[in-house]
Length: 281
Image 1 (cartoon, rainbow, N blue to C red):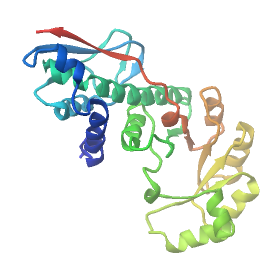
Image 2 (tube, rainbow, N blue to C red; image 1 turned 60 degrees about the vertical axis):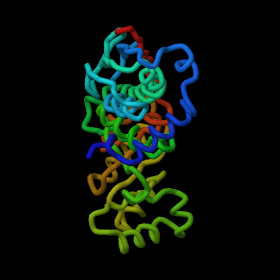
Image 3 (tube, one colour; image 1 turned 90 degrees about the horizontal axis):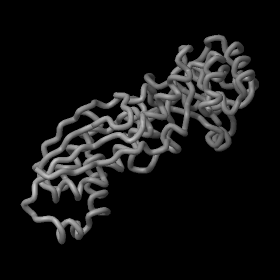
Image 4 (spheres, rainbow, N blue to C red; image 1 turned 120 degrees about the horizontal axis):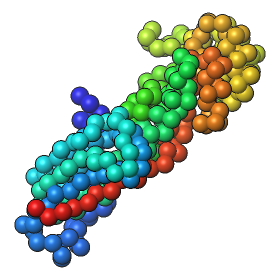
């Protein structure tokens, strides 16, 4: 099963079509003959890394079906302005009703993949991995995290049930780093690592002493990160987080951290400019 086979994706498409088409595509119904057949091409209007291509067929099927879809490029491909991503043919009514949702999804996911690829490229001279966060658009998380992978990045937790990350509010609620880590270590399934968010070397030492296996180094400068990585000396996986951007990521990666988590990959990726053009059969 792929991400596109998830029931949540089918539900998302159904809800989005209901939102956009509602009781019917009034303009198309009034102006286009029901039997009209058409071709369509989806083209890029800028350089981008593509993600979400299988959604074209799924949206068309949900919008009425009968559309033949040719995917000219695959997810992860780099395209330039004018390149054709897909060719479609079939009912003009279905194509017109599906157009906006297809473009919205492809533009959003390709935006995530494109931004991710830029972060990955900026850090490519190191062994550091670029990873995402849970700062995703509600309802789009699985697809956005897929797009991160299409752009060459890696995934952190899909949701709260997928890992143990003890952050500042958990530490406060638990009464400190040591009791939080010890409780997690005592009760967690053996396959899970315990990660702790730390802001100082003192907190790092406390987390390590309590048994943490991964350290999230929060909002540290590259110099502070370099010192922290040296101090940890391989005793735990190291992750840098907080305020990471395309100007700073290269310097952060050079500190020697294993991972850099970037919320902007999913919460701030600009949509890629695409368009669909119809022609008559």
